[in-house]
Length: 500
Ligand code: C2O
Ligand code: CU
Ligand code: CU
Image (spheres, rainbow, N blue to C red):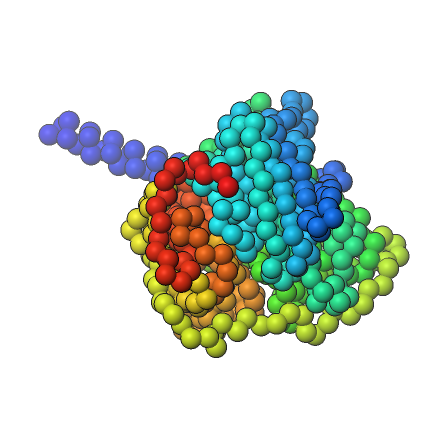
């Protein structure tokens, strides 16, 4: 009897102590760096990648993936990976209609891959898990740029190790231009009034090395308490023009960002993943999940200083999930210091791009995708299984739901899609343009339309997956092929070791 009473008492005591401990943990799980970053480093602008154009008009880039040491903190340097450098890579740039070619040399001690996120291209050039580049090997993909101007990016994409390779530092921007975008008078002086901002979070261990561990009880994977923008910790940059275009890329493994300025100034969203919106949209907040991009134009007054910040995110997690996955955090990202006199800029045009029009097309196939846990439609990624096949020259509608309360997003390779509706409602302005990655709110139904108009290949699949890289690595990915007339899905013979 006495023992029982003591047991009951100690259980109560234990619950109280652990409850209090959890309470303290819960309160400390919220990070707030607003006003606390010293902005002592000049923002690094990734260098434009050099390229050569041969007599047949092919533009060739040489990319060298390697390991190295990068100094982020006082004291010891951090072991990092990069492309043509020690951390991140150069900015690739090409025009619609151009033929591009790459020599991608893997100087690492293990296999990796380089995927061109958002690019419309043949499946065997995609750089996904079936196009591994072995250590010491050189991969030579090439294709013709056949899509509109957009802010795309590149990163490794090997099955099970994407999170690790991305976190170590392999990523960069891939900017596409076309005549329409060049004729709009948008800020386009790279590094001056057109700035790439690759936003990543990192955690450092006691030896200044990247810590890959996920926080206690989190569901999304690694979360850093330090922000790197273009690989610069605590960056500031001088502004010399009234209007500045920022190309935002969430290249983090799992963190959501809700971009806004410290003084809440409005800005204009002009482009999303796949290119320019039909018209600019004014807002003071913009949420991007991992893999998503946005181009915004913001105005500055002479002599002023402000910061780009990430505010607590507005959806994606329930209250507990938000706290444990960093969604309640408030983080200073970059400081902008406007010069005493600023070059005047033109006015933002009222019309930018053309609105997606896939809703007018006949629908060849409707498919449903339920994302849950680490699965899509109950299945985990199998390198040797082609999950489904789409037909060349067809428009499909994919109905996508996130059914388990964790945060997920969906990224589709090969095509840009149009968001038809979300729970039957027209999409909000920031989802009204072309997208390749979309954040999925729990229990909402997203209807996405996409058209497959080139590059049939029954043997080489494209991927669709959650872009929280932990989830992707743990199997939240499916594969599809595009079939031409009379073709049927082939067999993947040597998964992971196909060199075109
Ligand atoms: Cu950004 Cu399938 O990747
Ligand atoms: Cu991709
Ligand atoms: Cu996910």
